[in-house]
Image (cartoon, rainbow, N blue to C red; front, side, top):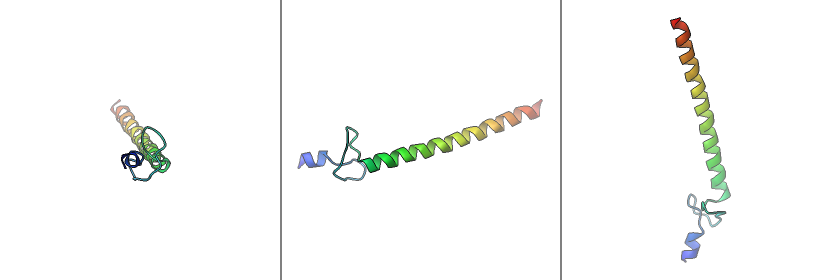
Length: 61
């Protein structure tokens, strides 16, 4: 019984963990996609912030 519980995915509870993270391939793919999307949004926000800062400095001159 304890061995069966140990071999479950932490996130969805399926019986297919692949490695020491104890996540199945589908959960790992979803997590990678989430972080990829988050990086894209962060990059766009950082770019917009730089444009605002640069625009403000150019107006002061």
